[in-house]
Length: 429
Image (cartoon, rainbow, N blue to C red; front, top):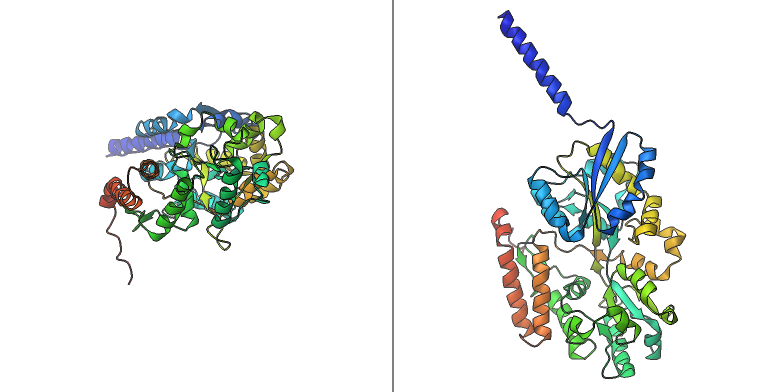
């Protein structure tokens, strides 16, 4: 009996020692951080200051190309080799949340003195909440708005950027008359789903219905937006050739082949450095026009976020780095080194951003952004939207038939999702 007791005590002691060895230890932690694209290089320039002010934490930044990131993260998850902290594109969040790969951050935010939800643009914050749980923290944001040649607009007799769809159509009509038959008012790549989607969001369309179980592209709101989109081509405002109409967007924008272009903040630096010096003051940006004066144009809540791996043994250290990067002063510095826009309003008060009229249009637009449906299948659905829109523009199918087919295709994509969810509640009469 004494021998048995001794053995049990020894076993308990060994198990306790093993448990202590395996337990998370934050002292002297080394945080593995996977950052994507040029953000990896940019954030690596900031990390030494974090390590200086957090002497117990070391950060190892690994720069992952965007083209390889999705597969690499999935492989790491399957192989139980996830980094402690990693960057995710906004549309990837639902997939990794469904896998159970992400540490919920609500409790961390609730205890934080540095992170306040209402400091962030509401649509951007919402994009990081999946099924009511915060799964990542916005790191930087992007969205789409109007880039345009203000000199061409003035030459056509239009004094200011359009604020409504009616004003936008009138401006494009005048641009078309002013520029000539071989030129266009707006450049719309047919391979991009973003233009028909932001028009639909501006109509307050719900792209999916019944708890994201089915497509909703035959709804009144989407059909209204789709009709406006098709009118761009019917009236000759946009070239039916889409992206095939240009070999270089920057060159054609400079040469006046079109005036309007829906694009994101990545083109602020691109246009500033590549357009001829003579056009330095001839282009600018504006928020998207809305359907009417009471409804502003709504754009996409895009960008990238920071997430902590669910199984990381260094969660507290990883959160310390997230908090540090979320400081408005750090967001401004990150903008300085990367060009990525900050997700908190207060950072926009810094002179670097407050004095930049082209950037400030994004500040205005970010108050009117929405996340795309938070389903892992979104990127497949988005591809179907662009192909459907292109087929109508090219005259291969009628709009009603295209939207019916789009709903059917999306329903098929979402079939597995429906099988995993309880039946939708019947709509109230």
